[in-house]
Image (cartoon, rainbow, N blue to C red; front, side, top):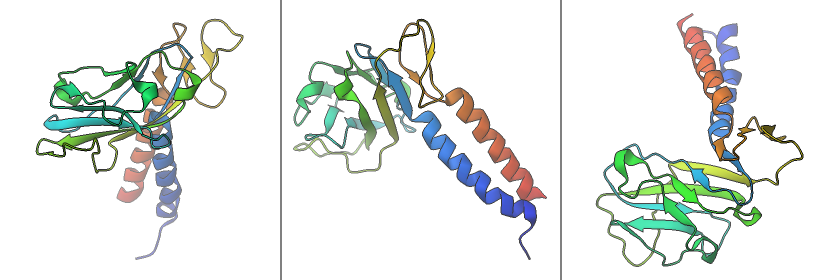
Amino acid sequence: MGITPLSALMAPFLLLLFLLSEAASDKLVVYPGDDATLPCQAADPSFRAVEWSRPDLEPEYALFYRDGHLDTYKQHPSFKERVELVDRQLKDGDVSLILKNVSRHDDGTYECRVAPADFRRKKRAIIDSEPIRTICLQVREPGPNSGNSKDENSMNVVPEDRNSAPVGLTAGVPVGLFLVAVAVVGVLI
């Protein structure tokens, strides 16, 4: 069984799909002084702890929430009194982080992790697992334009009210779905 020309074309489409889906949904652009909401959704709502970290900092923890309480042990000082979860009851697995009054120092990559219900680690605020969401937060100075402005390095249209908004979801999701459809059709042919 040989490789058909259509099958050979699927590999670049699948690679493009992977790259677009990663880049499109994981970038957030905000202005200094804004409150940024970093979205994260746990697939299984039965978990015991939530960790938001920024690996380039020492200590790296922005937020560690366990058993209904914020644990400030090893929290980076720049996040004290500036972070909270969107929903402290963690209903429906929503573990999104609110970072208040962002500054250019908040620019960086944030990782969201959750620990299963049987998580027992008490001495260190570390969840040893892959992140379920990684967000690249970019803090930009406002441009000279008033109203909506388009960030020059992304597909994100920053709303007039300057609230944070995920970059590229409107373009990335349809493009990703289209590429999946092309791949499926290619397999069927």
